[in-house]
Length: 532
Image (cartoon, rainbow, N blue to C red; front, side):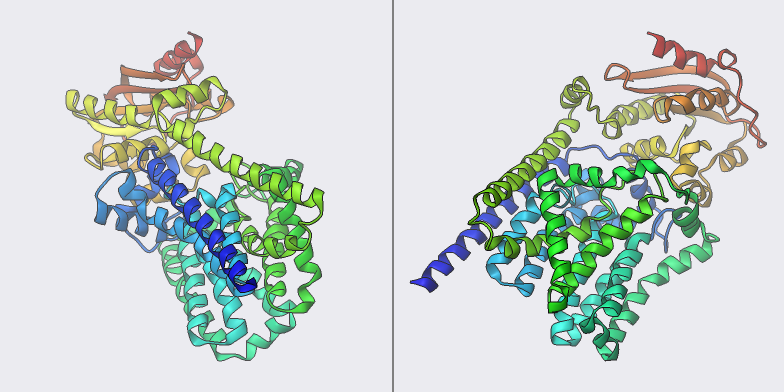
């Protein structure tokens, strides 16, 4: 009877996981097929049209996956995103596999359900972003290292090496799983034993193969990728506002589940001396938490970073069911746990609802009225349609005032016309200026190849912060000769403003200093639009 009861309970947890997995997969599929790409995602698509060993912002895997997706399914949102959707769907199964290996089958299905509820993890794969393969590869490496340390099987070591190579092919943040592994193999007795195993060194050799494209691309680009990721995007000085990182993480994970994850990390650290799997869970999780927190105090404070520690949360999802099982008989613990899971589900569904609304014009209007305007996801279809129509009416060289707008228009037009990019501060801020120069799509290449030619300029007047906007708009009259307004898109009550101008390409030479406000017609027209 006891065995029958255990089997029945296991079947119920498995069924609950499968139902939740299928429902979330359907939701992600709908969003992936309808939500417009935002600027970075569209730029990765442009990179997929120029296959290379790497790019000025990233190693090559993201572009390679997009190229694969469109080669199979054709150009479009789903064609671009389906490989990432597939990879993101593998993440909860890897969490299940980790928990089953570390504990038992029931803990595995429960951990998988927690992964589906965690907002950062359950929505992974909706967008074609490098964090998808990076997170999946990091979790695959964790499963592999847990197995390899216990069994010393060659296949597990090869899986570890392949997963780490995939990390290096995806992002420079691959250094974090490598560092977590190094600390595991240095600080724990079991870890130090691995240095004498041939499988460990084979895994390191395979992992190093993932560095080859990164090294080649940086050699070809004079170190542009390393320079951007390590130096240009990071001030490397203390900024106190980064002390709010735990609050950011609490919002990203939902507060109660975040507290449970921190408690699980603490309990795992206390039990690390017991060996497997506590040593692996403790070292890996706390490495991601602590090191990313310290780096955040000195590194990039301008970009979204709440997703960085996600690989550190995943093994804790596997251990939570084990730690809570003996405590759920306590009333307040049971209440807190149920509340944490319920709040996480609400957070997950809220995120899906936000992206679903952002995918439609009426939904974006609703979000705008709630002061949650999805600026990164709207206006691109309209700008692409307008650019296509104006090119047919006024054949010219197509130019955008920043890389995001250029990438979005290029995606909407499916690369039908080459598009150049002015030297916007955004290009350098996001590490895309060197790549545009390599493709000969920057402002210097425009002037060199098309001096005096008719020019169609698209200007996203809302791309820069308010304090930067005026100076940039004031320079545009030196970047197009005799600009004439053609069309203006004032979308969502002016939250998104894109203007199109006809003119001619200036001669090759230096950009003049900004014209004082009223001296530039583009500045005047933008100011008049905001004054309405």
